[in-house]
Image (cartoon, rainbow, N blue to C red; front, side, top):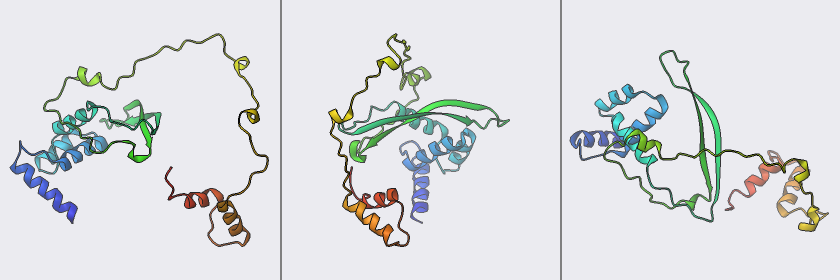
Length: 205
């Protein structure tokens, strides 16, 4: 009920203050609808009824997010980029046109590695496609194959000389507890990995 009341309040205020009020709820809904269905007509129809922002406002928000200043990330955080290719049905009239893309996500840990309260500055007008295209561009680099490649370049070293490895591994208290549970055949005890996940879920890494 609270969500419905908030949505109705945003619709009323946006209708009364057409040019001076930008509803974050309605802009977010319009951006979500375009991301989900890719239909400008759907967004503009709902916008004319006061349920969400217009297609132009949604696109202005997306471009503002693209052109925002880089996020401030803690230098001590663990950072990893995961990329993959994807094929999307762009919902054309025949439904068979496919869009091929390579995209990725930036993974960070711990979760507080990104400083809070980093707002997106909303642009007042839509920049040109050339300006938007210049953001996030990764320059192409040519791979030059070296001659010193192959198995002959691999150096094999005794890991025991670098880091001493104990021949006898002593089980931890958690290991002994799991083994005891298996030995007495406790009901619903998970496998070792699942048990360790439950034991360490409160730990901060």
